[in-house]
Length: 391
Image (cartoon, rainbow, N blue to C red; front, top):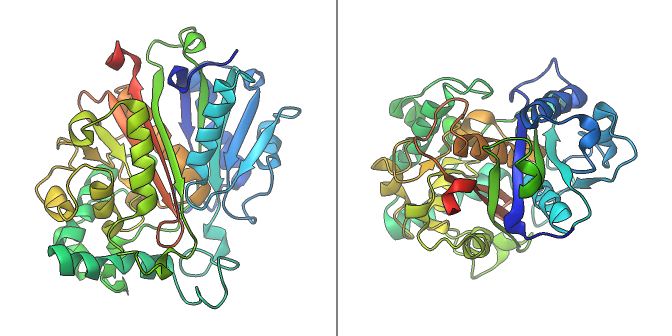
């Protein structure tokens, strides 16, 4: 039986601890996340009819068997999704389509990545892009190029970046599954060793391991399992080019995939005033400058006003939009395939009023924003709400 995407509901979420999980392998992290999601949903593993799993790196896993082996979900369709840093959220997107198509009643979206065993500094980049054009380009050097452009045009300061780190560490300090659970001061962020350009150590998210899982079904089925199921309200995705940094029209202060994906998701959700209608948001803060650009590209403030937006507390847990109430990538790190599903996990629990760590009071509508690729190649956005929000 087909249904509208507006009939898609989340009934269970789960996540492993994120961090340097040297005592956990891919399988044990996936088991931790999936079985928490089963318990949360009140379902048995054999009720899952299909699954999608986000994984970026071959050393983490290949094919859907990366999920079927640890969970013993043999004999059902399981698809490996890879779309840069948006792999996890794209797995969720495909799971929603699977239910909406009428093929399945109960499915899982999951994501996992095991990075810390690889050693080295920063993300493994072998095989990424053109070997000459992208030689030497790293994630912090690519995203860091946005700062001087924003500084020149709008007066953004390095202290504005520091406010993002202070806010996110304040939130993440009380989240039991975060990689980093300590607050930092403005002075500590400002004086941290420089990694690339303006970005210091405390402006960058960490290399991390983790897994997350989401159980997706239809609203009519969700009612049988729980009263506080969470509804999908908007879904958007946009992919541009691997060579965005070489586009002469790219100004480094607007991530086009975010703008386009947000436009699609807002239209589907009927949202006209993001700042006034969205209570909380998990956004892709791989670097502090990225979070500031996200405020602007998502319409939480006008272009050029991202610095004042965070500095004046509008992104705080009790601000206009609570941005990264979990602590974000800044405190969880970024195990690529897992991040998007973890964002869905966090927003789901926020909307249900049972967030781990900081709870946005009265949260009923939340947004997950996942950005991937050097220079912002792909973006996925999901908007979730409590069912009573639209009754």
